[in-house]
Length: 71
Image (cartoon, rainbow, N blue to C red):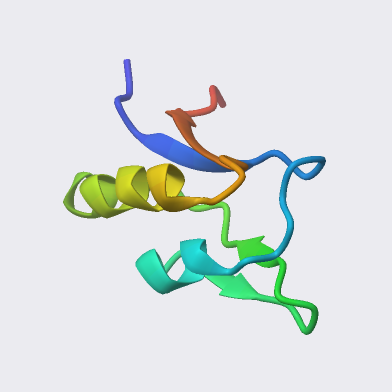
């Protein structure tokens, strides 16, 4: 069983503050309106701590770090 995690965004909550891209620039960029674009790659163990901090720092808690997807 894989322990890889992935980034999930609650689009109904996201307001485009962009803090997530500040914490995880290697996984998240911003579109022209400031909304996150996630690369979809699994979050490696080396960056998992920053991913958790990014989720906690989101002003509307729209970012989550979830267990890896099957398949």
